[in-house]
Amino acid sequence: MADPKKLRLGVNIDHVATVRNARGGAYPDPLRAARIAEDAGADGITAHLREDRRHISDADIDGLMEVLGVPLNFEMAATDEMQAIALRHRPHAVCIVPEKREERTTEGGLEVAREENKLAHFIAPLRDAGCRVSIFIAADKRQIEAAHRIGAEVIELHTGAYCDAAAEGDKATVASELEALTEMATFAHDLGLEVHAGHGLNYETVKPVAALPEVMELNIGHFLIGEAIFLGLEPAIHEMRRLMDEARV
Image (cartoon, rainbow, N blue to C red):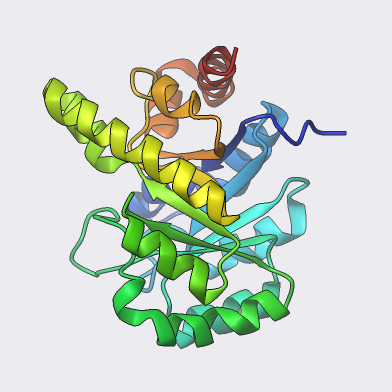
């Protein structure tokens, strides 16, 4: 039986599909990547079905639901189309994320407080269908309180600003962002929310976030797929898992 206190690793396979779609063929296959990740010790697989289908496709989600032995974390925007797809598949987890067509990647957390009533009604059928609903948000008290009020079971803290500051060598911002992540992880945990984190994490930035005792899961994708070009996907995942485990000692 899995240790409920162990920090889980969710591997995002979106960018295997990005490479595939660059040529318009069937290779590399995201489902194959998901199976390799599962064999390498991933605790779950994350896939974001975007409105414009720029990477993951509907067929990928169909396949993942058929072949995965670990939970699927289905990332999606709060649209009627995506809600219908999630209700048809009923994945283990649904993570509601902000989405803009012009962005290269998810730029920030979901604005929950401003859309509280709409989102409460949106997630209710997903919860009724048995999906664990997660909200991808900034480390902001107002957003966390709103996520709690609408009935989300999980929040995923956006670590992008912290990772960007680390890449730029901005030590002051790294410190302030880590302080915010630390304080808001504790705040969310005390409200009864399960806390996850992700976006931009790599070998250099993962340990301070992994060390936060309230964080139960990290979702990491782009970096691992990039490292897989040089190391292979299995060794890349093993190294991330090692660093995560070291941070919890």
